[in-house]
Image (tube, rainbow, N blue to C red; front, side, top):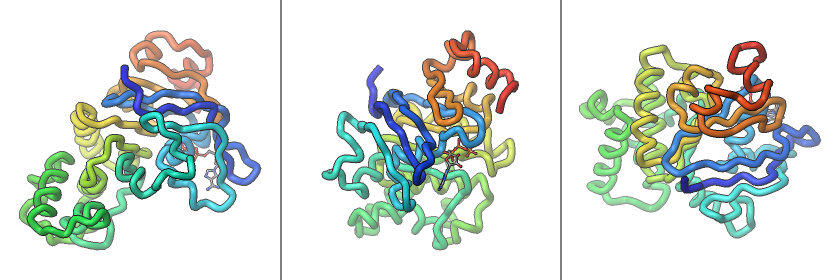
Length: 251
Ligand SMILES: Nc1ncnc2c1ncn2[C@@H]1O[C@H](COP(=O)(O)OP(=O)(O)OP(=O)(O)O)[C@@H](O)[C@H]1O
């Protein structure tokens, strides 16, 4: 299986506090990897480190390496804006910008210099279709993004991320603010998107991780305890902690 992201002996700190410790993991291209584990185990820190979004937190520092297509993403010659174009992120709470649906999706492409209206219209339509939102909003693209339902807002955020044609999509608990129907829709969408995109999802929801992921990473108190194919881990976890977590005995 082709690797797209490799994490090697990676640790991350908030000041003196080590939030993730010596993580080594590979992420396969066009597969879904779910990062699971109890609250505070470092899932979000690892995911956010892959997007370099924690850079702005005072006192945040890292050790070890994260490679994207064999390039060290923390090296000095990385253009972070361009990197984030290739590795997009969607957050727990839907966060549409205070602007129209159209402008939300066109935001990234405009940032990267696309001005032609026709081209922007094409990108908006393609992205909203990919995010399975087009049919619901095609006649009201001028409406504010914030006027949509929670589930629609989250799909709008996915459309916004897809508009710049990333290769990897990072999602941090993307369904925790959604009702069961919106959650199910989003899970189906992620499975469809994984045909063309590499997806890494942090989730609290073990059943969800089992439903949608090809690979699992189980973390506990900052350590990576076990990783591998989801089907294998579910059938026979190698580590007792993994087994306890999957059976609801810790967490
Ligand atoms: N901005 C921050 N400043 C200081 N410490 C932080 C910060 N963000 C997270 N931490 C600490 O780092 C550790 C890992 O947190 P992280 O959010 O990565 O865990 P998590 O597994 O995603 O948790 P949850 O499932 O509750 O979101 C925790 O002990 C947390 O308190």
